[in-house]
Amino acid sequence: MNKIAEFIKQKRKEAGLTQEEFAMRSGLGLRFVRELEQGKPTVRMDKVNQALAMFGMEAVPGRMDRK
Image 1 (cartoon, one colour):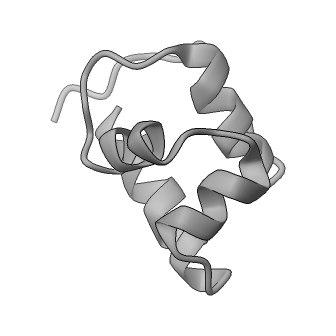
Image 2 (tube, rainbow, N blue to C red):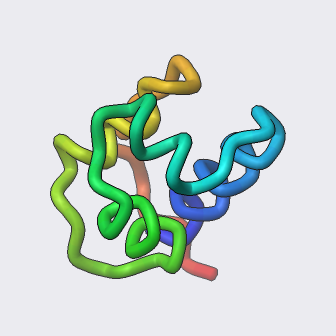
């Protein structure tokens, strides 16, 4: 989840959006956006995909990165 958190935070900042603005535009709650960007290990995948959709992306199954 940390890669997703880093991706969303980076893209949000590149778009010049605050967490509050991103939450409003994506239809997500501010608390969720904050927890997502902090890498909370338990978040709802439908909401993660809602956030990723802002950048034309979605979470899909893939092999685990063993770093």
